[in-house]
Image 1 (cartoon, rainbow, N blue to C red):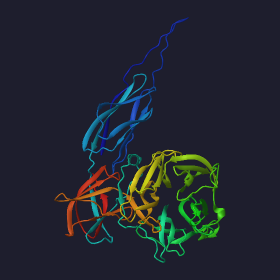
Image 2 (image 1 turned 45 degrees about the vertical axis):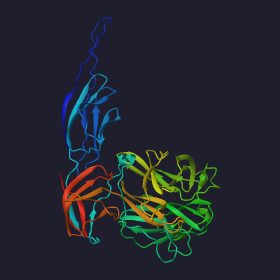
Image 3 (image 1 turned 90 degrees about the horizontal axis):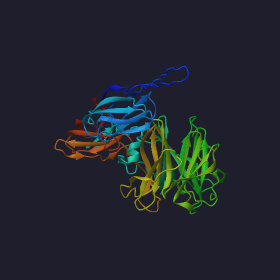
Image 4 (image 1 turned 30 degrees about the vertical axis):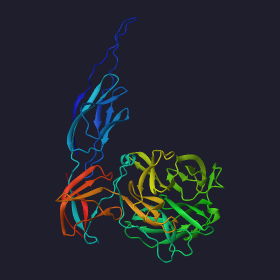
Length: 517
């Protein structure tokens, strides 16, 4: 996208003289209003040039100001939005190749005006290249790398236009086979400098089968390190539904739920670690104790509550926030806060809905904070839903994120988002093929750019699936070399980014890179 602009008019209108008469006479001239002018900031172009956004600033003049498109027309799917009296934003996802010329004008209360003309050359089909890179790829399969989602885009989430690609591994992470008890779920990926530390709960080949908290490490969600038990069930029979926050000094704060086998009475429990290996003052694995149960002052039903499978800890500025559900009130997700853990103060209702909250992420984009809540919908649809809030205090009704894709992940029980700085790369979820929920494994969906491959005869190929957060795999005809065209769309699956001819071979990996233009 190339943008040119020309200042076409400024300061239309005159200066009004006021004459007063009285003893001695005299003439007084009012000072002119400050001249009105506008200026525009511009964004650097790259391979991914959408969504398009330009902010227009006004200086001088006398409020109130009125903004209009005074000539020409905005491109399709682009709008003019007033963000304040002194600025407007041209933004959207232009989806039609065209050259659009239009003029934005601002007027003030003194009839001054200023205007700026724009010419936007929209070419959503820029060029890309596929560069061969080393990698182990099955025969007959082409792997394309460099497809991970970009920075969090609230427009895509508000519009629920998201390109979720299932991981080809079903499951992504299976329980260890060291005993007949193989049941892991409640994943919580915590970003680290060199990848992620993945916490999860369940029976990871443990005998007897009591839920405990484990962790492993990964740099790419393709290979995983050793699995360690972090929290043992201790004085409980089950500890699960783990979520962890990390402070800038590297220390960790963890909330889980703990209870007795066959007994619905479960309570949130709290653990802390200065270094990730010592928990509540004890080298891991730490045996959970009744004294680890948190408190929620002001929530009258705490002592008789059932807090199973729905608790999330979030660090929001200098405050700790707990989102939780009490099974005695299944249609409500509550919110409590704390200055010092684990002593919370009840705040009220965060969401009126039957779903089970598993994750809340705070993401800041262009100075605006967004709170993304991930929940599991427990019904025959077996789906994961989400709600997006701008304050983290109240959340609107959830929208469907995705549903199960096969009999293997039919019964979904928990979800955790994968973050990398301000990019939301995907979602890990615990699921099972049996209604007893005692054979769960961890599955993955990745939010990625949409890739379509078309051969020379016009046959279109969609991916087999993703392989980790930044790779997609395509099964192409086993003829060796494949010629065709690649189409690249943003992670909304709709916004075209690029297209180019390709010549690839099965059993090879290729990196998607900008071809310029």
